[in-house]
Image (cartoon, rainbow, N blue to C red; front, side, top):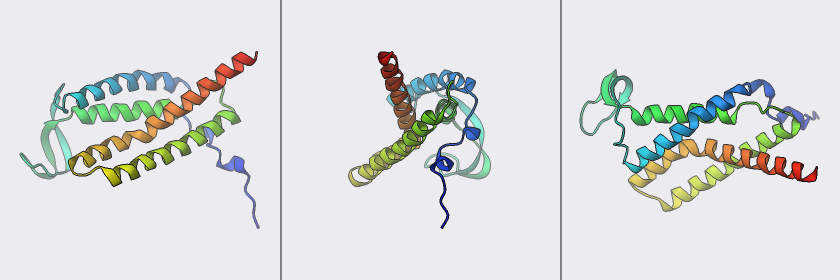
Length: 168
């Protein structure tokens, strides 16, 4: 029988971005979050950016249907969504200044916790939300794993650093 050390399963530092990407990520993530909230509050009609884009598939109720062709559409939510994801990935998966085994274990447990909470929320959504509102839940669900991970990881880091300074 083969035994594999638990350290093999701890998130590898080789896959993490350098620490400087964390500040770049926050620089992208914060404005993207604000713009996303503005878009949600305005019903995705605020700040329109119309542009011709290549669409692999577009099934529009009103307008142009296209497969592997160019369409003219509002790309604001696309740009904000991409910026949010890139910023969140930079923040979530950049090394800390002091990256050690505790941070690696915290990173892994936070990621597992975020996935569990995300799917619990999704199960609740499947059970209680119907119609077009469920489509909105599915759209927001694309972002929740990263949001939950970033919040939990940074909260535990903050709590741990605060308790470490209190002990000194």
